Image 1 (cartoon, helix red, strand yellow):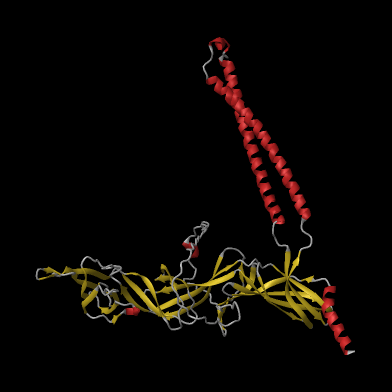
Image 2 (tube, rainbow, N blue to C red):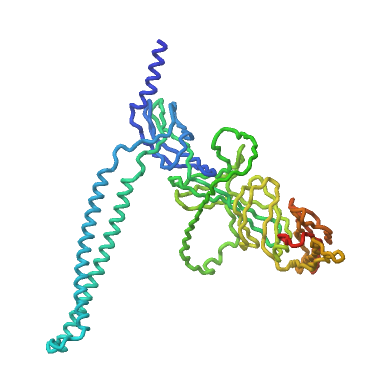
Length: 548
């Protein structure tokens, strides 16, 4: 008896769901959480169900859905039997529409042929009139000179030709316009016909929910799924005031969504979580060494096409119309931050519309003030300019991305913020300053006597000396960092020796770069300093060292 009861329950579970026709429930996207490369979409629907088993279908339009990610909740009295993503084939292709459209296209093509025939007749009439004019330009034979028309007949002929030319041109213009209109209609209908015949949506994408209701009732459904073709990346704006005190750092999200579904009035959250492509932990293979093997060269071609559309002209407004407007500058809105175990998430405070198309949407996430430390930076061996640099520290919220720099409200340029650890320093170039001058010059380049008695040596001994001059012509004191390098030999045939530097650098092999030296100065107004570098390079005669 117990086994029979189990069989009946199993039979009812697998057979009963297919005894009911699915009920398509209208739904709306309410929330979207955007990751890098995909989005978690939350739909909401309301409907009335009957007592017993109900098959509820929520139709979706996304191009690519992760079927394993589909989940659903039903708020009502009863039990959920199953939730799954399905593609339901469309049983009846639109054959009737195709036949009607083909008939319209054939009729339009017939009309086009008739119009083209009429235009050809006009072309022949025009050619006949032109032949008459050409004949009048030829020399008249002697035997028909007596029959040449008089002035009255000639005037009538010219009037006839003129009026006929005007009439023909008018009719041709009208025919050309008609042919153009017919061609446009044919093109539109052929595109629609191609869409009906082509590989369009032959299936309906739905989330199927089997819900066993305890009674007839109104319920609320909430369904989630991951969809591809949605992406965001950080974009920064750094604003440095003229006082070089606090730095305003604003992080934006640059969004591109082409999921196939428009997001209308959705609650949008931006997440920096790294989606898993699998659940396995990384493994380590053996570290093998081998000699290079010849292989075919692979060439990759990449192209980028950017379309820029000019903004429509704006009406000029008079300032007096806005004389009573407030002077306070509006700040960027701020998203609500949530710190999750694996990521940060930023929730946009108001509903957002983002269409599914090839268009970027930029939304602000947060603005924070950080302390900046400014100094001047010069590399005279590479550039005669001195750059104002602002140094600040990153926090754990900053991701890698493009960074636009503004100094005193003016756009300076764009750089890139690489991945930074919390507390790690990064530097912002604010532009060149001509009031801090730097100059590097070679003051000595001499080859020593290479004879030993009367015998010529085989080694060149070359003495080199450089002078770097820095000067502050500003009306305030500044901090200055100067970088320069000394030659480093990569072979025992070239030797660098007798190195003298006055003053000694603050740091040698700066940033772990061999031969790079750093000098640091505090320069008062009108103060000038010099750096002197002397060295000797020896190398074989007849061999000119590279880089010297």
